[in-house]
Amino acid sequence: MSEPQEPPVFYAGRPVPADPAPGTVIHRWTDNRPNLTVATTLPCHETQEVTVLNRAVGVVVICRLCSSTYRLTVVDDLDGGFTAELTVSAERFQLSRAARRRST
Ligand SMILES: [Zn+2]
Image 1: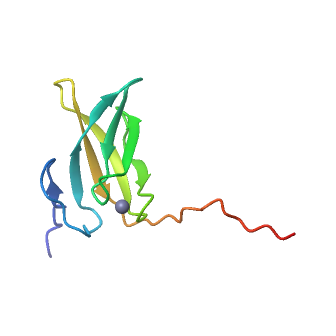
Image 2: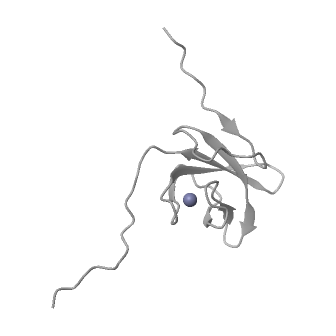
């Protein structure tokens, strides 16, 4: 009988919680890049930049540093810019580190 809760939304430029719950939506500003792409930074690690098509919808983005996972959708601001909407995902992907041990 409880109403479904709207996921919290954090707008661009606002502080983001350190460990946002899955479903949290975080808006980020983007920079326009060549070939219809935009670049944005990840909320968990601002040094981690991702570049996606400016029509990206639900693209899986994984932080290389902490493996936080997001679904990234790019929204046209209709003023020549784009906002990245990152939804915190409960999915966890293991990044493989190409450091496979060879048995010789
Ligand atoms: Zn991170």
